[in-house]
Length: 114
Length: 112
Image 1: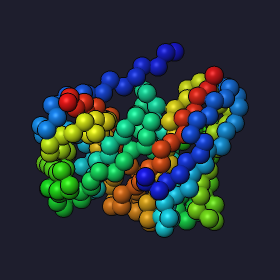
Image 2: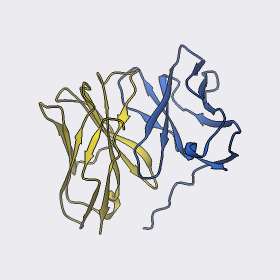
Image 3: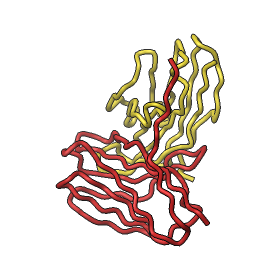
């Protein structure tokens, strides 16, 4: 058990809808990362937060947004969903969000768009 | 259009043998590397890491080797067990921050 908790485990919804994925980092970790894992793209970095502030942005679509709350949990919001958004979404956390620190992953949310 | 899944390299080994999983990385500025294990239905699980000022690091039954000259990373698993069956990813990051860049993964299959 990595200590990173993600909910829900599965989400099934339709095109055009909006969903929210939730992540609680490991106790003591201040930084949260979101990654997308799809069959054709592998694991791709989306966005990073540190202590409530956005720190780095990767290949995140404008339809997607995220935030980190004062209690350090994070949410990833996906809107105007398309079939191609079907994927596994992982959250990871690390202590300070700087280079040279391992990231520990949750077990992901599997998003299926019908 | 139809999605095409990633064709993962596969390594099949006999239980008890040693396994070597290889990874080529692309960014010469990368200075921290991690190996992850991902089992079906689970998230990537941290195995071992290494910094660029080292060329070898050992853990329990695992060893990571780093060759910066040719930008190559390998994971050696000693006395491979059926529980080691999984997809293994290498990941790299540079000194600009913590985002990880993942390799495509290798599927390890252990035959009893």
